Image (cartoon, rainbow, N blue to C red; front, side):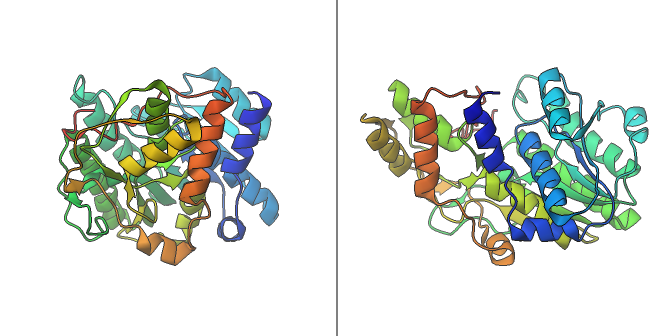
Length: 339
């Protein structure tokens, strides 16, 4: 990693006072399952830094298949333990060491139209393997706002009590994931919190990057999905750690999304101003979109630190500086659910 990326990771893993207090309140080690995904490094490093600032001696253990050996090596350099494990293999999961505090991050989304069975297997079987092994721990589950139906763009977004009625097969696999965690929590008394995340962003990936890169390249920006939620990864990572303070059986549910409903058109125009370009906008905004209301989250844990202006500026600067980008489009604009 170059200096810019290391500085970015320092930002994404910066714990606030509430995060440090949450980690200080924990007894036992912290294990991240599925740590090889987009958020894994930032959350693991934040957990480590918070533990160090709290003066605890918790081990931070990152578990993944680690098909990217460089990621495992970088985590080790930071002082984070790594274990290579296929979470689909129940025998391998049973051999993992004890951890009192577990963050379940594993899941599968993209490619579901080509191989739907893999998404069902990953999003439903892995949770059962995890809870069977860690039923005596407390678990923070990263889920998705894709469990909700499309809602009126002027209605403030789906709340935690909104009936689950996703528009996509992927969304139904996520409902399946939540159902498994919920039932196992009720059966074993395992305290959990389920975080329904809607679009974490940072300069290398996310909805903002998708829009910015289309503006930069002069590509059409479809306004049909004309409204989005956008949250900065640092704020999301902090909430992930703080969610240990609200685990319960049955699980506590919390939407984690941007505190505002944003217009794709306006976001594109802001990036256009930053780049000195005119966005190529096509289509008309629909009256509905996939939106979550995260007011309960920010009332509980304090307002997100990153403003929309900050996020726009940070992403635009990162792109103009020619820094490393991840080719991981969110496909936020897809209304058919065919990811």
